[in-house]
Every structure is written in C-alpha cells, then in structure tokens.
Image (cartoon, rainbow, N blue to C red; front, side, top):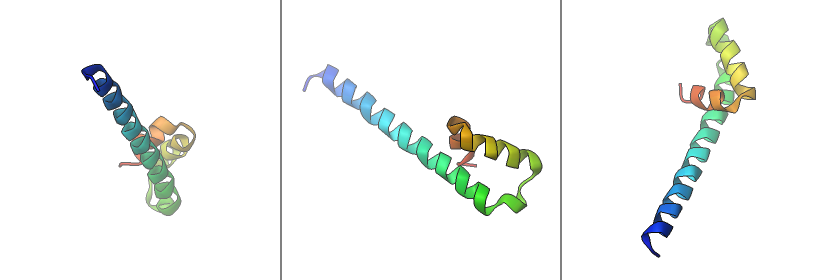
Length: 64
C-alpha cells in the first residue's frame, strides 16, 4: 500500500464512523422522545419530533 491508498482508506473509515455516530444519535433522539416526553418543554418536544423526520437534527439532538 502506498500513501495515497492509506489516505483513501482513512477517509472511508472516517465516513463510516461518522455515519454510525449519526445513526446512534438519531436513535437516541427517538428513545429520548418516547421515554421522556412528559418531562420536556414544548419547544424541545417540537424540535425532537422534527428531528425524527430530519435525521441530521435528530442526530445532534440525540446526544443532548
């Protein structure tokens, strides 16, 4: 393997890690929505529901 191939593999691995992290955050957002709906404020509830359908927002909200 030369240096160019190593860089390509590094990008592939980094993208795979980012996709897995985003999927985990999105799932955690749904779990938080289902289990903590009563304890949330109105705006947080609305944003989390939006995050279910807009996965990038849900992925970020899942970690908070």
